[in-house]
Image 1 (spheres, helix red, strand yellow):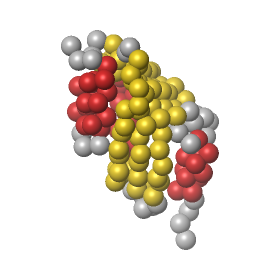
Image 2 (cartoon, one colour; image 1 turned 90 degrees about the vertical axis):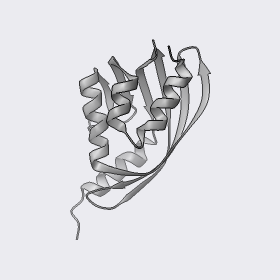
Image 3 (cartoon, rainbow, N blue to C red; image 1 turned 120 degrees about the vertical axis):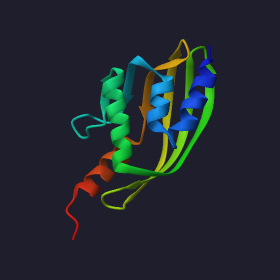
Amino acid sequence: MRSALATVEALLGKWRVDPAGCMRAFVAPHIVYTLNVSPDLHALGGETSGWDAVNAKMLGIREHFEYLVYRPRIFTVQGNQVRARIEFMYRHRATGEMLTGTFRSVLSVEDGMVVRVDEFVDAPLIEAFMRLVSQPRP
């Protein structure tokens, strides 16, 4: 069985190029995903449970954004929990606007599968960006 570190490294390493494949290979059916953005302000925010719902949300992100840079770096491993920092640069497909920055992820692994992901982003930045891209273009 894969260790927590090996599981997370494989998931993060493949996410940029094969999101659907890595979801199938490394994510448990009872996955819980949280993003520290208010669900009232953005559909991606809050907590989502279950493989189908999390898969739809994660692949939905890929429909809206082109990943130009996605550089994960593992910081710590404690038992079944892996902490990572991800540098990103995304292009919003509909508007061409760029979103850049970093976020933190805390991933929990059981039996070689990711069972929980808690992501911590600069919530005001994400919320402001989403307001920007929802504005009518001149």
